[in-house]
Amino acid sequence: MYDYVFEGSMLFLENGPYAIIPNEFLRRWKQWLDKPTEAMRPESIDNEQFFCEHQKLCIDPNNPSDFSTAAIIKRQEWDVLCTLYSGGPLIALDRYLGADTDEPKFFYEPPICEGCRTKRKLNWDATAITVCLLNGNASAVPKNGHSATHLRNNGTRQSRRLRQVRENGEKRRLNVTRSTTVKEIKVMIQEEFNIPTICQGLYYDNVELDDNSATMGSLSILANSLLTLREIREVEEISDSEDNTVRKREREEGQGFGGTLLSSQNLSTGSVAQEKSCDKCTFSNPLDRLACDMCDTIFV
Image (cartoon, rainbow, N blue to C red):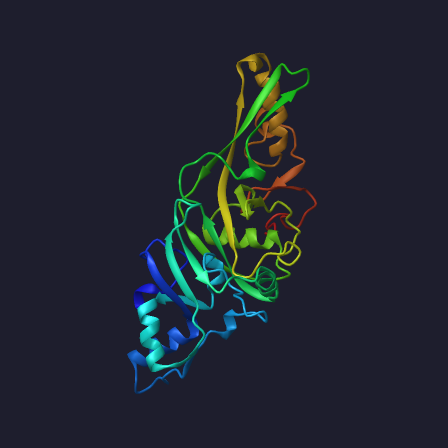
């Protein structure tokens, strides 16, 4: 059974029959096997916690975030455990390639009660969420943060903003409460991944979390959810028709970096900056700020 604990990926599982057991039972069973004279032998397998009042499943076997309290074992291992322990009921899984998907998935009995599952996952005060820095070298971003082409003035000036994404598949678990804001999560991510808050594209179910004041509760984030992170570097491309306005464009864009090393005012005109940049996240703040509006770093 050691090889079949569910850890957020089904890639290591073979096709065939499986069953669900509580993580707590598996943990205590391992402790008893390792130290039978010190650890207590578990008494029974209690799968009632995975059922709602309608006697349907309140967890989704194909959703890794639902498995904070559950583990998957082979069906023959379940059969052996049933000769040694009382309890149940059986939650039977079959893993194979479905007709509507290119990847194997679990088919299960009994069915899921979606209403009770959602209610169960919304009923939390504190939980751990997983933040995943996506794999691959794709330059595209999810649907709510895609690249765009803009027409300026009479349509003769055109620029395209590209988002170049560095992804390496890292994952981190962050402890949050219902009152934790998006801004606070981005600060945690900055500490864990060393990615400035202004360079973070953070998504939940393909929707970008762009309201820094929103809380986990107000966004209806489910317990043990997965957030997608992309590190974004913005690049401005100027079309050939704008060659004669590049200098003006540079001056205009430089104003957006007031108080930083990228400021065109500081480099070109020598004028006094009207903003100050945070050394930690590079966000530009008004001169009268005592701390960064983005990451709360205290200015010295």
